[in-house]
Image (tube, rainbow, N blue to C red; front, side, top):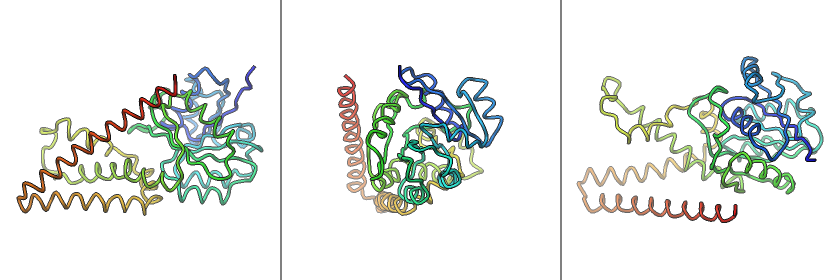
Length: 299
């Protein structure tokens, strides 16, 4: 009979709550789910709805029992949490996070981490614009990517266990990448996109009746401008160097287009648009190849 895993989820917002529901709904691992959240009402709701088996606002007993601790807090809060509770984790505990920055965070956490626990840094490439446990859903992670950023001290058997758990929660592809590459790519594929959405919607003139003219294009481009401001402020600043590089590269491309339009240079403008179409097709083909490879691995 398989041993029951005691899993603690720290922070029962939309991501932590979705982990709770997904863990409850999976059938491969017997689990006992414990929740920690600063809001008693959130804990009460999670308990009443059956997302967790036990919950407390701040209880070291939960951490002393946990085989796996999933920390879904903001970057600064993760560091503070680990430092505050460093003596509460039982020997051999696996810790993991879900935040979208790694480089600086990895260094800060490793400086306060006890030697007898294993922190495997992770990042689910899935989420929602809405905040709070009420929007948590066990299907949030279906067919999503998950990035693990291993460090030298991680034990391979713990990485393999975490990967198995993630796959049962619906993640389609669990990949390993070093923290520097993670932050460089996330600055481009995620953070820059949010910067653009925010800039676009903030560039509108308040007195205009924009809603009367909005179509799918504007809706799609500004969807992620509905943003968790405190969280994304931390994410942007933690990844400042890589994000500024991505913003500068984008600004260069923007200026190429602007110059071509100013100079009425049809050839230059057409070339830029053709290149964009070509790159988009290449991206779609690469994504299809990855999906095909993943499907073959599953079979």
